[in-house]
Image (cartoon, rainbow, N blue to C red; front, side):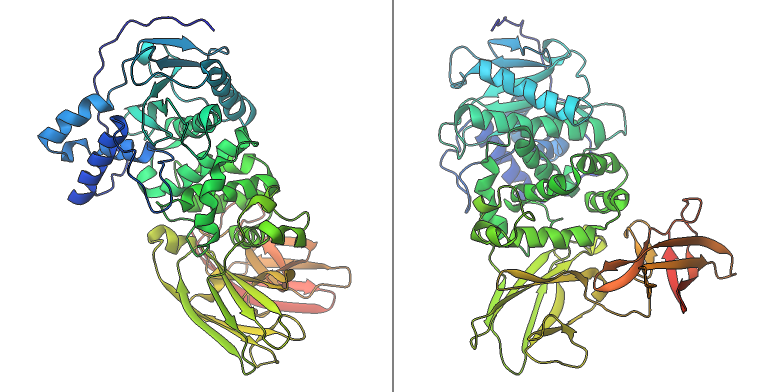
Amino acid sequence: MTRKILFIIASCTIFLTPVKAQELSGVQIDSLYNLFVQIRTHTHQGIQSADTMHIKCAFGIVSEIKFNFNRFDAQQKAMLKPLLDRPVTDTSFVTPNGFFRVHYDLTGTDVPTYSLDSLAIALDSAYNFEVNYLGYPPPPSDNGAGGDNRYDIYIQNLGNTYGYTEPETEVSPGSGRYTSYLVINYNFSSFYTKGINAARVTVAHEFHHAIQIGDYIYRYDLDEFFYELTSTSMEHFVYPSIHDYYQYLPSYFQNTQYSLGKNGGLQEYALAIWNIFLQQNFGYDIIKKQWELMPKERALQAISDSFSDYNTSFGEQFNKFGLWTFFSGYRSEYYPQKHFANASDYPVLQPIITLDINSTGTPVQTSTSPVTNNFIQFVNPQNQDTLVALLSNDDIEACIANPDTSIPFQYNLYTFPQTGANKLSNAYFYSFQTGKPSFWISSAILNNQVLQSGQYIVQNNDFAFPTPFYYKKNSFIYIPVLPDKFGYADVNVYSSSMRLVYSTHQAVSYIYGQKVIRWNGLNNKNQQLASGVYIYVTKSGNNVTKGKLVIFQ
């Protein structure tokens, strides 16, 4: 590989103003300062978290420092400023496909220990997969910073940190999009994944951060989880034989009550499996669609809205995702063709509660956070049955407002029929109480066999649900019907003045334990309706039903 020396170009740090800055406390500011100085001066080898000794991605750390730079004191600013500048290196080279310029040292403490030829191939592979194959736009030009308009990679001694993406200049005022460059570690010899393979997944991960903030939106302070789970899943998509994300999986499989929309912690890396689940079920495009929605929507809303083209909803898929996580490890053999491709390598999921079944009824009173999968395990001492209830909350609005919101609920399991209880089998019945039942979906597994899946916990064939229906929150309205002998029904929807706004004749679906027609809330011209009360009339054979529903813009 040909390598050429670059002239050293004087640089100055550009400090940024985010679209919506997060208010950090003085303690948080000092912690950021200490951590970043330790990363950039590679003095943090002895620092360990409770779960891992390595920092997967310092993108959030460096971003928060740049966006909050004026809050540091004079002494801290003097220390940070040169560390936030582009590193100055001895030399550089261009990758074979011409996409990247790699900057590194020939002598000193930052000399790479892995093959630069292999790194160059890895970089071009990440670009070809993420841009040319998946169709993401390339990161915006940095206008010659680093020597030319190629995307710049700097190899540095980062101690126990894999790497980071550093935002640099806003593409246009108010756009919320930034140019950037990558800094990756010179040596991965003591990491979970070592050497060039660690470098490979690092560039796949960080390059997607460059795409995220360069082509869509920088909103890491609010939607950190989505940036990190996407970039971690990209490691798997680009390099499926390298399993660096395995190290984070126990943090989720042992704590599935962790909210999908919560920022921070190792779980946001472990939840790369959410995107892996989406890719296996819908392909890659659904993930890209979510990023296309991101500039105008929060991450969870973008995820929810991305299902509108797939005739399904977020809640349905989140509950199905819960089933996939349950059938991992040794359990994967009990759910053939319906689990992660690498399910047998994943940890065995741990229920949040395990207790014996009482012959008079077994109540469980607990609480959880919004957008969580909650597994409760019941063991029958009489016959050694093991029944697992999967209770999925899909209240994305509550999660966006505060992912730490406490949602109390009570689940009761019976071994006999009970008034108001739902039947799971001839031997088991359940009831469920909570403040907002329309945001809950359940499945049940008996002795590692699925008894029931994707059932809306509120069963009432007398009304459409959810109502009110919000275009920004819900994907579909489910209108209960009694199908004809061929499994079809007619549905007409009228305004309060009895003007026909929608009509359909379609096959009846079995959703959430009910026979329903699924409707996306759009009129016959594929337009959203005004907020208000609407009347629906269903007809199937000689069966005619009527009801009301509410739509909110």
